[in-house]
Image 1 (cartoon, rainbow, N blue to C red):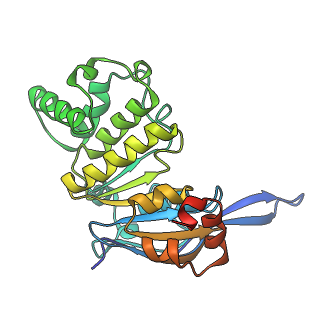
Image 2 (image 1 turned 120 degrees about the horizontal axis):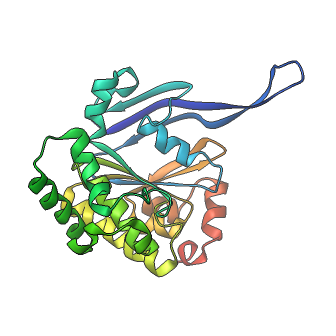
Length: 263
């Protein structure tokens, strides 16, 4: 059984109304997508801006509701889950956001950012929370002295490490990385990608890794899914997609990164 299974998932947004108040058109952000994510793998979801990949990631986590279709997690349809059931599921399903500057509350010290998941989901003593938050920082390559500081005191790469630590707090099974390195420069982004690869081994994580960068996706992913205009164009192993793509759009993505197209 796959960890996650999407069946005919669709998300439609109205794009405006005419003079009579009638919907004039619509945007199919995600259009009839069926896909599985296997336990322990990294599924890379790649496509240009506006392809629907970030919307799909949010649908997987039920951060937004689909127009139609089904989302199964460990065989259970999470769209039928009530509030208390979703609260339990939130422990298993986390997200790393694209913007390391906007995803952390600037008014909260790092210790409070990392303690928040424990306060919501677990009953721990103050000493236990301090131990766990210190462990999380060490896991992502930061010193426990960071706990007393505010997000603005860190670089973009360090902030993203804090965001990753927050996502790891409750030992999730699935992490959706929504363009987690696109706001960072190349060298810092490479460090974060290597960190994610190490953490996957240490914490036995499953990733849905969303990116517009084929080189990054190929490096990190077990399989690759290609999206355009809300549609899923092709899915295959990282090797197959990058060496023998079946879709013209995938070939165009590869041609834009010649180091991947001609290894």
